[in-house]
Image: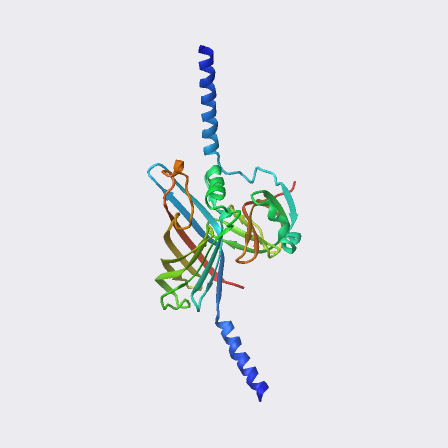
Amino acid sequence: MKKAFFLVLVVIASASFYAYYLYNKPSIDVQKATAELYFEAKDLTKNPKIVQPHIDKIIEVKGVISEIEDSDESSIVILNGGIKCELLAKKNIQKGQTVSIKGIYTGFDEMFNEISLKKCHLVIKK
Amino acid sequence: MKKKLLFIISLVLLHFVHAQEKLITRTAKVTFESKTDTEAFSAKNTQVASILISDTKTIAFNALLKSFRFEKALMEEHFNEKYVNSETYPSAKFKGRIIENIDLNKVGMYDVSIQGKMNFHGVEQSIKTVAKVIVNDDHTINITSNFKMNLDTYQIRIPAIVKEKISEDIVVTVNAHYKKSK
């Protein structure tokens, strides 16, 4: 009887710990995670629809930097004139450079017709 | 003669097209905050796209809801899936204009009102808000504004169980730095 009571207590305790863990779980760390899908920027700008079903997934895109717009909180890097990647840490990169960037795909921004990625990081190939 | 006239007319028209100066930003910052007695939280989107046409003083914003960043993963998930339904309504849009008769080519600081339409969660709503406009020496323009959005107005239903944790009026802060588009 005592044993059963103890068991119930353990179950309740672990369940609440798990709930607490889920509730406080921080957002995903893109830098540590590996990309689920790979794209060439030129394929994506030609046909943005191919990435549409993959919202919320970490994707990696390789392309040429066509523009960089800095603010005090982040850097927006545009690949091939049509993919907007937001890097939270400023990096030493330049227009015209070919880079691979991974980030979370968040949709299509109709204002400038750009595919949008957040929490991006440069992928340095070893 | 007719040709000449047409040429002159097109020149005049071309002049008007040129006069329409477009300023843009991709790094406008939109944050929203909710604060109740039991819980406070905020989220921000630092990659909001916006256009400002200086002569007509019109402004347009497009904020992808999925681009908002939360501290906690679960909040981000609930926000997108349960409250704003971002799969169906992917962005919050605003289109409006500065009502006051100010010259956006003249360096200075202006307190203005912006009136326009907010489109969010499938609901279009007329809003009017005060804003601060700064025309900088390098002719870039800063606009900051702060206003409240009522969840009920935009048909966002908060379940009774979390009602105490989420405020009915969300405080939205907008911060944009516009540069001439190339």
